[in-house]
Image 1 (tube, helix red, strand yellow):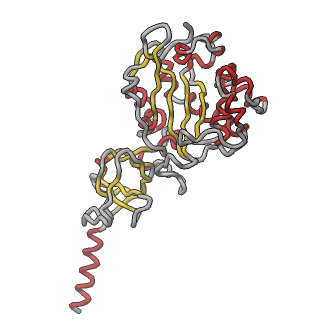
Image 2 (cartoon, rainbow, N blue to C red):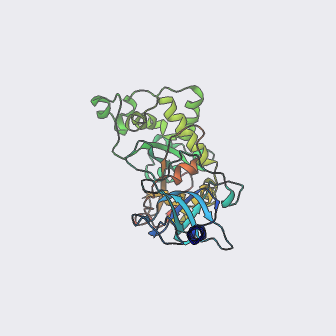
Image 3 (tube, rainbow, N blue to C red):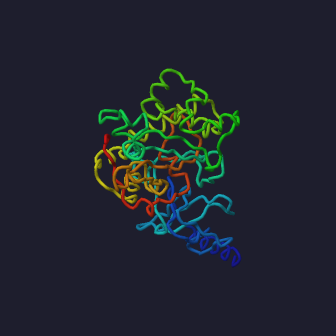
Length: 342
């Protein structure tokens, strides 16, 4: 009898030490190194595992109580992978536009990427130009000579390119030495022609004004040949990403700040508002000095992505899954969002 009582007592003690949890979803972005407990009440941490600053992890549970204190995460490559981390160690992020509060947001797919490895084929950079600023640095470009405030790229992001990572992953399938020799702005016209369906061709000419200078041929040769999909898919999927970017509140932020100087931190905050907390940290701000003055003008945003690119992607999800990027604030502490025209 005494043995039975001891066993019951041990079970009750174990249950008392277990965290009562409610399902939760989204991502947790660590802001500091914190212990990842198997049991935060007992402070057990097999392997002495810690989450890493600025890395995102899939979130599965939150401990119940009047004041929740811990999230339960999935840490890939750890045994066991389910670990509890203190809430104050970071921030929680869900898909932008979700009508639900964070605790009720739709769960990510089971195979959603959690931590991006920039050397894997599913890592990309979406280079989105602010064309008026670019034209201030390259005023003799054909696409800049006839830029007007009525043209699409005067108030929307323009496509520079979609770049498979790592950055030196260039000139892949079918590229000859002769093509590489011709891959200079002055001879881009000699590169193979881009063959697209009429609808994609028309949209590309609108969203990538650099097609007037044969930028599309250059981008396909350098980056598209490493995309592992046909030319039509590469450009159609690039345009789908740009459509999501230009339909967002980030585009509204840009348009409402034309002629003003902003900081990379302000731009990153606008990215967070548009695509979810933590996405801003995956964006690098590029700038140059204008040719006929001393202003630093915004030329483009380089947006890190991770995941399989499709026509109907959730852009915020792809951004959040990528590794954080340097904001480039040292080079571009304040940038002018330029107006079209000279």
